[in-house]
Image 1 (cartoon, rainbow, N blue to C red):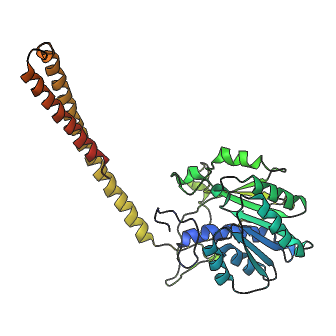
Image 2 (cartoon, rainbow, N blue to C red):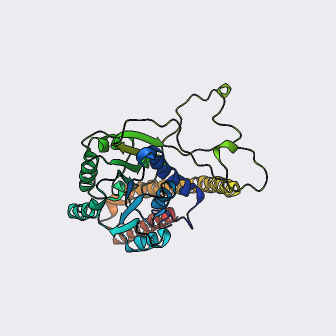
Image 3 (tube, rainbow, N blue to C red):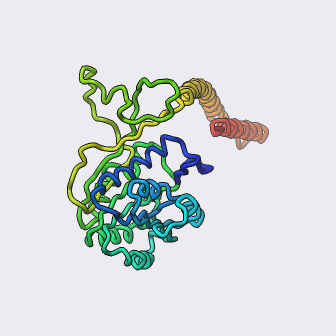
Length: 334
């Protein structure tokens, strides 16, 4: 987690289980969609510390893995996480620079006969210029590769991430799709919530242990499923739909969530009281302004002939300015 509160690189040893599940399910989706490809060459553009490559390696042990990232620190972490293997190659690469892709393609030439899968998850929004990336993906797909890209739905998260140079919502992702030579197939990723009953001592659960699936029809919850948290673009391969989609269920610390809700309620009560107090101060300030305006209007004819009154009026004006400054400082405090 950065000092600004945005966790831009998942860490399998430190990240929360919900964040890990969110990333895990995307890479499992890739494995599911490419399951019939034998032993593919996986190319992870923006591999970070290798979390995604590790998942692909688990799912297809005989696969060849290529990862690239701009960060030396991330690549060092990936090397440590993935271990020394001839099946893994990591490259430092700036995805905004066209000349870097030719170097990358040269490294891939030894595996031209193998099925190739390009993965680029949560990277496009960080690039000031992603034309070179799209050109590279288009070229790879043209020669038989399958590609998967994802971007966050910033409308879902509701805050502006300072690390994102591009903001994507439903309309923006449709515009992004139009930039490819062949329009990608669009998938949406959703967070899931619910409840189940388990024996004591269970730390993780599989789908067949879930007490129920979706809400039964008698509850009549017919509204739109939800707002997607991420969009996934799929290019190349056959236009198939999987029979089932991957999901990950994690046990979370509900007490921490309840504490957060309680704290939010307490904060809202505090802000409501503060708004009332500041409203009263504003009303008082408006009364001061009205009184001062009335006095100025009455004294204006005598100001030029009475220096003492002018000086008094000037002092009252300075006190008024100080009152405004004090109120502004108080309102500006967090």
